[in-house]
Amino acid sequence: MATGDEMIELAAKHLGEKYILGAVAPKDNANYTGPWDCAEFVSWCVYQVSGIKVGMRNNDAYTGYWKEDIATKCRTISIEQAKKVKGAVLLRFPNSAIGHIVFSDGNGKTIEAMDKNHGVTRGKINLRHWDVALLVNGILYDETQGTEPYTIPAVNFKVTVPIMTDPIVLLAKQALKNFGIDPGDMNDKYDKNMEIAIYNYQLTKGLITDGIMGKQTLKSLKLI
Image: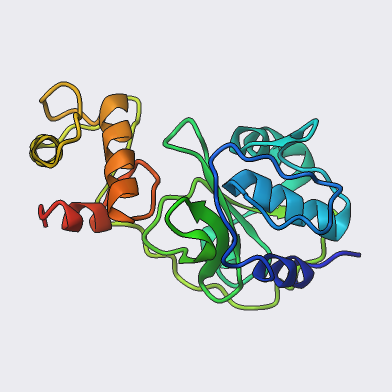
């Protein structure tokens, strides 16, 4: 049976490769070396190691498909537990913010196709927004390691229903406008236009591009 350790070993071989949003990875090509987007990278690694198709429709992988497949192809674990399980998957749903998916390396870090600025790289699990942690059915994971506390971001503005409002959002919009990025209506609402503006700002500044205004982005905007 395929293992989570094998998945991490394979993922690590692709560190440094390019990221392109919307890239499609040929799932049957074991020699493929990019470009990747986040869902293509995770689904390709899972398929190469196990032959299991998760988060895919035909040859296309997408975080929304991963969300749909949770009930039938995965089981959920806590984010705290996932930090210690090699090959566990952490997923941010595309309806709560810009979707994203990564592997846990079992040591509190990730291996992921992060974004255009970083490519396939190692990142952190803490202080980022995740909706769920998953183990793929049919893959053997070492779950004997103890859990490690997950640090939830103190500040994490994203598109929600009802919409998030705060005076700092207006300050951020003013800072973005001064930087040359249009955030839409100048108010205290974190709406879809603001999410796109933050994403573009993050892309320009070499930050993690997730459209979420967290501590790193607020620091870059000189608001905290």
